[in-house]
Amino acid sequence: MFLLIVILGQAPRYSIKLGERYINMLLQKNIDGLLVATIYLTKKSIKKIKERGVPFVLITVKLGIPGENYVISDDYYTLW
Image (cartoon, rainbow, N blue to C red; front, side, top):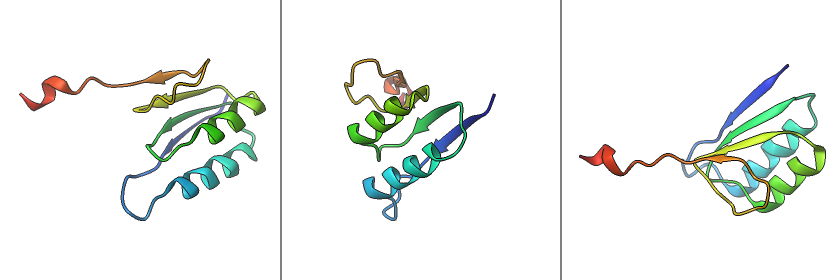
């Protein structure tokens, strides 16, 4: 089983368009699943992942799409 972890930075050189290009590129490969940690993601990208039947987990983001799997950290206490 192959699992690819995608982490797109939050620097100015990254964008939603670049994030979508990465997702499209990864979906052309023979991958078994995705862990996606980025703020540069759209519902359109998730729809493509779901249409391909690739299991995925979103990290640090929730898009409100039925059936999405996500993990969000509660950083409230890290400031204290």
